[in-house]
Every structure is written in C-alpha cells, then in structure tokens.
Length: 271
Image (cartoon, rainbow, N blue to C red; front, side, top):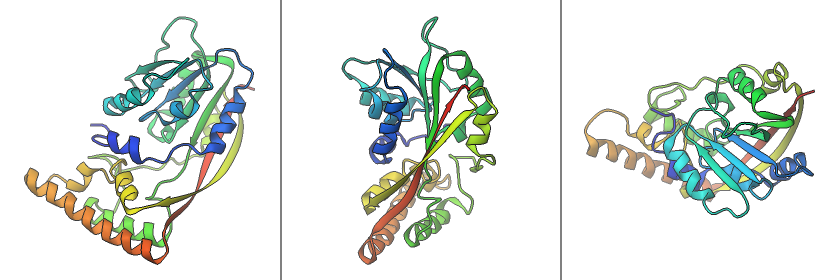
C-alpha cells in the first residue's frame, strides 16, 4: 500500500503550493533555452508542473501512486502550448518517452526522502541534457513545526496513531540522516547551490484538517485504525476531527494558526 493511500483529493486541495520566489528562481535557471523539457519526479498531484508549465514546452510527470497521478492529470489537462505526459511508475524505474529525449530540468519536491537517492541520480545521468539542472526542494510539515498549536496537534495525532511518526498504514517514518547537499555532491550533479526561502502560512481549522488528511502521518485510514468494524472506524475519524477542530479553534482565537517555515531549494548541475 502506498504511504499516501486515500490522500490524493486532500493533497491536491490542501497542500501548500510552491512559493513564488522558488518559481522565479527555477524560471531563471532555464531562461534562454529553446523548447525546454521538465521532468518532475514524485509529482504528487502536480503542484510543480502547475506552477512552471508556462516555462516549459514538454513536461513529464512521474508518480507511483495512481490516485495522485489521476489528480495531477486532471489538474494539468488542457494546458495550452505544453505537451504533458504522465508516467505511473517510480522515479527509479522512469524510462524516457522517446530516444534522444533529455530533460533540461528535473524537479523533486517534498519527495527525495522517499526515493533510493543514488539510484535516481544515476537514472538522471542517462536522461538529462549536459547543462541540466536537478532541483531538490521542500520544507517541513505540521508534524515537524514547533509552535504551541502544532505541538498540541501532534500530541492529539499521537493519541490515534501512536507515539512515533507514521509513514503510511504499516510503516514508521525514518528521517534521512545525510544532508541532501552531500548526497548530490557525491553524484555527477556535484555543483550545488543552496537557497532558503522564508515562508509564513496562515491556516484555518478547515485547512489544517484537510492538510492532515493529505499526509502519510495522519491520513484518514491511519486515524481510523484497524480495530472494529467500518462504522466504528468512521466514528473514530469523526471523533478525531471534532477534537482537532475544537483544539484548533481555541488556538485560532488566542493567537492564530500561523506557521513560520523555510522552503529549501538545491540546484545541482554537472561541474
């Protein structure tokens, strides 16, 4: 089962998009190229291609979760002047759509930690332009955020899913133990520049709950658990949602639901 089973509609609606400064940074990175090609790995519901589609002539979207890919396909359908292809496969198993195809930019957003990183970088060495840019980017989550309201929210989630952060139905999340800059530096894309973009997000109880249902650590199936019958599991989700809404409404009244985050962007090229 995918780590994101049953999360796709929530992911498309409630996941924060790519910050505008990041969009401008990536746009500058391919400026002046003729008919540039974008390869987006671990695309989820297609947030990166949606943000960058005006820059590229061709976009290849790779996502192993069929539900996520279906949402991405719907979101990207009908984009003018851009050819969009979707691939229901893993980043490690991606095959270029035609002989001679080469990506000018590869984007991996909030997904590199799920991948066999060295294997993916090896694949990219075979299907990218000589001056291609490999972009690894992302931010934290409401699980990792440290504020009064996110601390209380995390404690509530743990009452339903257990003390350790989940990564889907039957897995525990394992944080990567090496900086991405170091991993990229050991690949053929060893010329790495790093950018940090401060982000402030204002949430509401509704958007927080929708976001939680989009994650691998508090999706509806995880909150529901395995015990009892279907009706009992649905009641468990309703109970969680009611308690979360009460908690969030209280914090919103006292000081707002504000998240201060950082969006990190690594641009890696061949030296």
